[in-house]
Length: 137
Image (cartoon, rainbow, N blue to C red):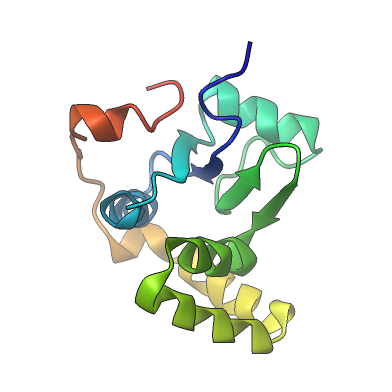
């Protein structure tokens, strides 16, 4: 039986981070093609994703984008791919690929280190259609 997420792009994020939750909401509002689903890294699903790839299962400072059976991306590469997939004006962010990954990941890491100071944790209540895009809510 095929899972409802197998043909989607799955965004893994820190469920306890206000900045991360802001970006999940931002993607939800712009996902007109219904391409994305979401899972917190702390969830059983997120933990399984991390452990199957030998990634850290205790530190949640990295966003991942996973296309099942195809690829997964992390940090700035994930952000740029999400923007590209959203299309429209956001495709322009794809020019960010000209910046070497180690530099764009340095910026990503700097934001990640300070993310708890940048945004308050807010309790966001997704609509029923948005809630359906979350794995293990």
